[in-house]
Length: 299
Image (tube, rainbow, N blue to C red; front, side):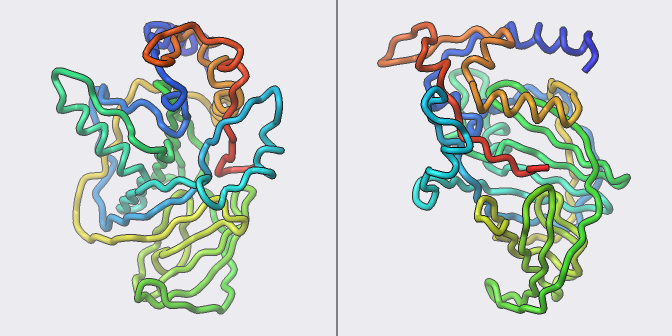
């Protein structure tokens, strides 16, 4: 990042005073942003698909007693350790946008409010937005707290292997394909009867719409819940984001999960902790707090 951009970013965050409890610090519950200046129209949809995305929660632990890897191995995620997000995938001519429906609806609601407190997210979401462009660029926008990062890489070509297995999922005749993508192994079920090259995140390249896809270790999964054909604009909101490269973004996100209060303090955001209705300065308990970090991309 250029020095001028970094200085502008820090000057922006220095203007915030966050008064929050521990739940509000959860990186999977960012503050909705209704202050976008404008929207750019990227294209027009052919189809809009909804998915239920399941992922591991950013559960908290004390970093002085246990590290992230050990926590991930010992923690039982089968009961309370997973969250779900409602995702919308808009597909146009060579363009795809994948975003959280819950976050979008909250932001639109916040934008209508002129007085009083705006609602925050009531549950964890997956705080990433993905846009695939016709030239192969893959744009990721990620937010935690009131910070928004934006970076680019490539959607790439996915090498699928057809297994020959077939199954009926929600009344759709599906076939299975497997792949290794960004450090994880996935099994996808696609429907040849709906010849749309579409799916969540970076998934593409199958001769039918992706109805279900899971990573083989059970950390991430998506299941199609609806499909709507029609013509709507595909918008990209112009947030006041920090533009960076992928390595910078991954390092910042990892630091945020590892030591959220220390990270906030290090970048100059002033905040207090709400406890029993009273505010106080952050102490040792907050500075040693960490969140389980389980990135979608491992490589």
